[in-house]
Amino acid sequence: MSRRTLLGAGAGLVLVGCAKGQEPASAPASPSPDPQAVLLAGLIEGKEKLVALYQQAALSDVKLAPALQPFQQRHLAHLAALRRHLPKPGSPAATPTPVVNPEVTVEALKEAERAAASARPEQAAAAVPVVAQLVASIGACEAVHAQALGRFK
Image (cartoon, rainbow, N blue to C red):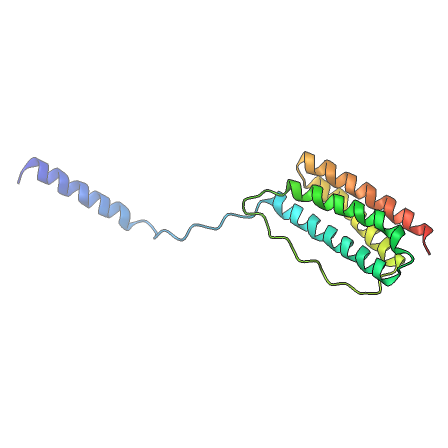
């Protein structure tokens, strides 16, 4: 037997021995979703619900509809700003507009605005700086909306 053959056979046995002790490779774990994309998707979903509430409120009370339009327009502007920050690859799909109660009162709008504004500090703390600033601004606007809606009866 030649030295070359002996070395080749030995190397083959070493490789077989190394491979035998290893566990079979499992399927690669799916990457965890980007926390910022998840946060933004939740913010967008919440904004879509507020827009839908305002649409329903306007349909419920046509006399009040013109007064509610500026509030809804600001929410649409927030929605557009949030969507600009959502990363393109692998971003969550847009959610359909939720179905809400067709009889939405001003009191229900005020409560929705208060609830949204109260969630913003925690969301801003979890966001990257540029999104945190946007979230804080949105929360301030929602808090003002809750106060301003108090003048409608």
